[in-house]
Length: 289
Ligand SMILES: Cc1cc2nc3c(=O)[nH]c(=O)nc-3n(C[C@H](O)[C@H](O)[C@H](O)COP(=O)(O)OP(=O)(O)OC[C@H]3O[C@@H](n4cnc5c(N)ncnc54)[C@H](O)[C@@H]3O)c2cc1C
Image (cartoon, rainbow, N blue to C red):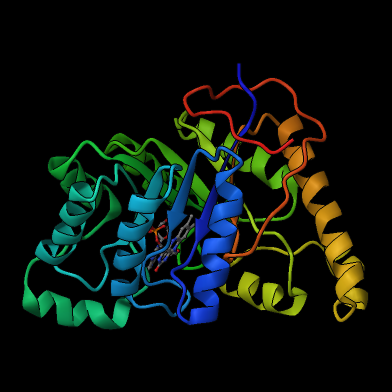
């Protein structure tokens, strides 16, 4: 039994100012002994080559292990395997293996050569390149394009059967949703770790619109609390920290032992409020006191 572990997600910075913020946040979070830092691939409008550059540089500069996100949609097998090999050669042992949303580019990719068709197939290809530690995505509120929860769970089980080590969830705000999703996963035969994806609230309106796109439900209580203070930065920061503390405490009570923080490249303060026993001792302890 160990304390909970924390991993932190970043996107590749696009401007000089963004780069300063990225490295400042990475530097401060390095002091907190994180399980890993993950770096997105082509998400939030960033270009994929920026991801590769950032991953390679971070792998060289950071003490914390780097997990590189990789999406196969829009690339041929040869192209995406080449990036995975580049990561392997740069000492990156962890991959977050994803489909991605580059549907427009996928037709063009199919004309260039054979493409992966599913995440399990992609995992199989990655594991032939290197014994990567593989994380995958899961969706407590069901993926917006999935037929239903059962389809989502079947696909998730196939990802674990193909060799994934853990699933990182889309962000959500009701701690009971974690419990419910883990119970459904257990019924579907999934016993591997489900990591809670946590999005600290910064800009409430942007968060709500992002949540709509991702299919994440925003509880009415959160809207009632945050809407009136959306333009008061001090009140927002205070409420956001309180929400984060309470959310993590409740998840710990629900036996969640790995939290993946969507940092959006900004500093996050995790407070040790209510730590209990852990069930996942496969990863190093990481938490700021
Ligand atoms: C932790 C995390 C990290 C992410 N990082 C990135 C990133 O770095 N870069 C990036 O571009 N995106 C990223 N994403 C977004 C992700 O690429 C999208 O959610 C994508 O649509 C699905 O990827 P997947 O790997 O979950 O796919 P899958 O496992 O194939 O799909 C998940 C579920 O959605 C269903 N589904 C997906 N697409 C369709 C469709 N077209 N029609 C019907 N059903 C469908 C599947 O059947 C399955 O049930 C991330 C998401 C998460 C949760």
